[in-house]
Every structure is written in C-alpha cells, then in structure tokens.
Length: 163
Image (cartoon, rainbow, N blue to C red; front, side):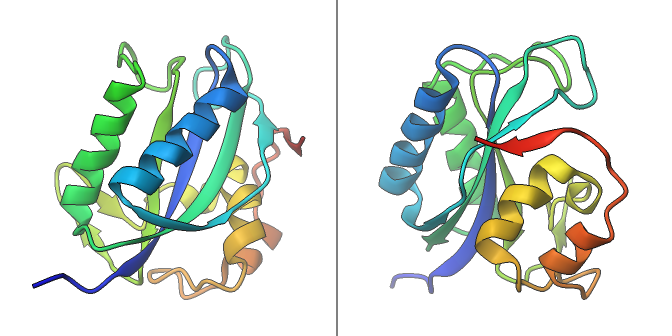
C-alpha cells in the first residue's frame, strides 16, 4: 500500500565547488529519490551565517511531493548529501551541499534527529527569502503565521540577494 503523498519544503545550500551545478545536481537527485519537485525558488547568494569566515552560499528553496515519512525523508536527504560528496567537519562549516527540511506538510515533530518545522527557520533571512518565493501563504504550524508575514517581521539583516 502506497502512503499518501505530502508536500515538503526543503532548503538547499552550497558554498564549495561549482555552486550552481551543486544545486542542479541536488534537485535532480531529490526528484529521483524523494518525489516530484513541484516548485523551485530562484537562486540567492547569501553571506555565510554562524561561521562567517568562509565563501558565500547559494541557497534555493524547493517544494517536493513525497510519500516518504519524515525520518525516511531525512535519511534519504542525508544520503544524497553524502552521494554528492558532503563531509561534515564542523557545525555551520563549508559544504558542497546542505539539504534541510523546513516544513513537512503541517507536521510538528521533534526527536534527537529531526525537528519539523525547522526550529530556526523563522529567524533566518537566507531561509525565508527563497521560501517566500514559493510558499508565501504557507502557514507555519507552530507560529500560525504565513511565511510572508514571518519574513516581513524578520529582524535578521544578513545579506541575501537573488541572482
């Protein structure tokens, strides 16, 4: 029996190698292994956040329709990161690819491995700018606010520019 499909919103980030190619490759792998990519934001160049002494990131938000349950989705995305050559050396460090689950339908879920919605997304311009492009009316299941409203009220001043 096939599980019901759910819409999930993901954020892709890369600051090593051919960054645009990394985003394209990640989307192709997600499309093959996770489900139908039904929306993709433009690409945004973002100053590094958290650990600032590294190259700028390219970020892109995508919407994907998936039958994978949240923990299986996480495992699959981590596998894609590894397949693309990601090595985790330090928190917020440089990376070929980073794929974060921002929303999984209207699910509120938390355990040691996964927190949905992403617990810091509402504080980060580099998440909200691209996400607003494809899901401005999506209502954050915890904050009960639209993505567009969260972005409008955001105090984060990080430089995020659509390219």
